[in-house]
Length: 114
Image 1: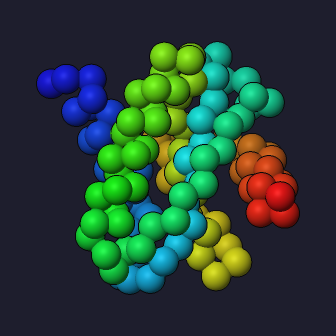
Image 2: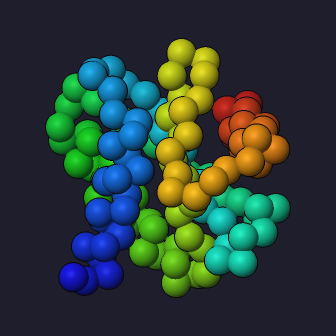
Image 3: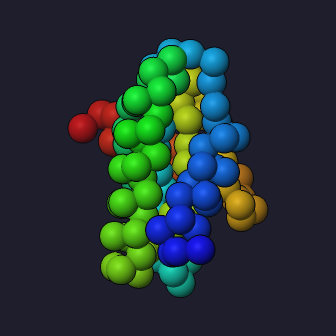
């Protein structure tokens, strides 16, 4: 199995935990350095229309490409976060502390203000 295929399966697994029936939502991809220093957290925000299979495919394709590129720079995709009606749903294969989630939400709020 190619590295690209492995990454795609990983991303699809994270994404499946966020799947919605329909509607357009903002999803945040969280990238951290391989050493796990969350101070250098990078957040990529994207819109996904769950009622449009092409929009979902575009999200998965783009996230796969960006994740492979990020790994070259020493970053890994730690989690994806769905914003839904003012709340946030986290999907990750790793245990995320409440403190980490709080820091992420503060950074997301900064992104939304900019």
